[in-house]
Length: 262
Image (cartoon, rainbow, N blue to C red; front, side):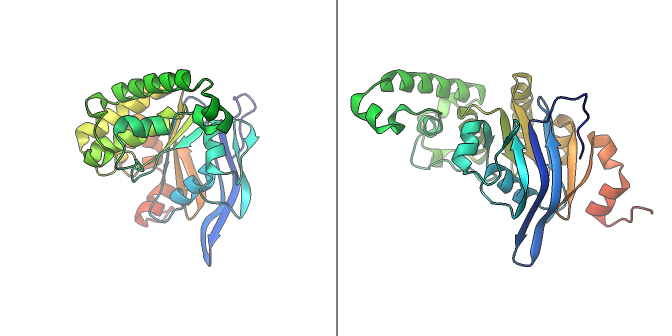
């Protein structure tokens, strides 16, 4: 999709992405762009290629061809940890917290610039205590904003399903993202928690974090996301506000089998 010369270059741009699994073409020349300061949804029927696209963008899956640009930098095929350090951070539909660690310990695990990662610092203790104090303060701030303070000392295994969803978002926030990619953040949660998560995402956007969401919960998408990008058969199909997307005959055909000319 061409970008208007009057607009700021997109924070994320995917160009001609192709990924095959044996004889199955999961991505067939996918193009999409995510503008800074938006909460963008990526939707599509089952098998459209959304999860594969997320995997290629975040470095979990290497594309066969095409490119992924983040903040003007080509990150195609880079390791997930390098992509995360660059500021593109994703969550997972199934929470990946370490069950036996506490909520606080899980959050600390994902803090950036861990001082103990450098062997010489670990031996000399240079800056370790100071950085640990900063990370602990950050972890408590993240827990407070996600209403997890009262379970900070509980093991992740003891959390409810909804709390695990919030911890997964908290884990991503600890990495201080420019672009946060959320994989079905309200799948399986009750309407009250879905509304709470929507509020968290909206506030993050107000604070300057760009968000890209894959979600099947259309009420959540309609209330929060603008624009909405639709994929079908591994390709970009449409992009607009939710109401326009819902009325688009091409989208109706992709989801429900209606013919676009019907």
